[in-house]
Image 1 (cartoon, helix red, strand yellow):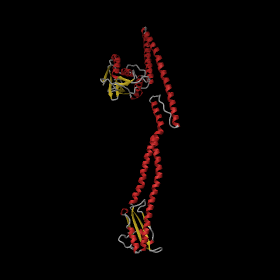
Image 2 (cartoon, helix red, strand yellow):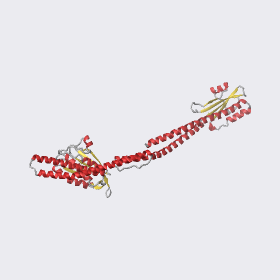
Image 3 (cartoon, one colour):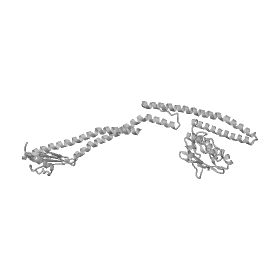
Image 4 (cartoon, helix red, strand yellow):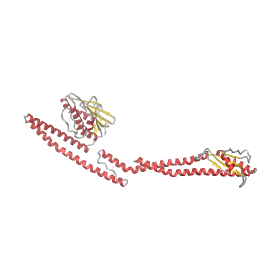
Length: 455
């Protein structure tokens, strides 16, 4: 919008300059042509009268006038032989000379139809007296080089002045456009922050009445959205928290029932009910984690990635050993890279990613955890040897409540990867899914690196 305003302003100034300067330049050019023609014609007529007189004094005066022009003006004066003088040349016979001698007509030849040519030629007949016959003719050939230089001065000065005015107009246009669009830029910044999830963003109410009204509307909408989403988060967190206790009690009751039942069919039903309770518990825990993550109740701080990874691998290795799955750690962990993350976020992220990897890994497979430092970023990758995902599945994997089917036959809550993305994104990182070399899935987490000894 700023560029459009500047272009419009400069175009308007350019049109104004053209409407004012071009006609003036043409007027000055015509005036230059007229003044030069009038001056040379007047001088030629004076010389013609001297030629018409034909006496010695007149011829000497004619010769003196012809030789008075400076050499730099490149003026040639010629006359018929009524006055014989060395300084006077005879004119070249042509149509203009014939018209002067036969008809007594003056001619002015600019040498070109547009502006002028190389020379301006003025031919004037000479009469012996008023009403007498033509006795000769005088011709003045004037080089137009001086006129061309003057023409360049006229147009060049105005062109240079127009360029300076346009540059000044562009500078003024930039200032005016930035000043006029400043409220819009503030509104755009606020909208960008809102799209990034910052519902606390507000815009200053400045500028014209229209932008003030728009700013008030956006501020009210942002405040309303913030209130509604905060209420939703509180509800989800409270509901999840309240559901955890009865679900735990229900699971304990089912375990007690299973221990006291001998009927195989009843035991199978109880085990299925217990599995559903476990799944519901995981779902409730996932909702609680999401609600807390969206509320951003904690701030990111430097954490040792190696310590967190090593701790979570120690926790998950017994479960992997039961399936014959090997978990290996590779990469540049010797340097103990620090990453910026909220306390507890990395633990939950690794738990969800490792749980999914173990779920899809066949017996005897290997899960590889790799850490790579890349300047201001640290990439944590978890690679499995499972069936992987299609492109369509990858595009939906981060959707809430979307569930894939693991090799063990158990389905998850559908919140695992959604929780991973929310926690990583809140800490300023990114997460992507891609194919692992040799098959399987690679979950690549890009985290912000922290400086040693500081945040």
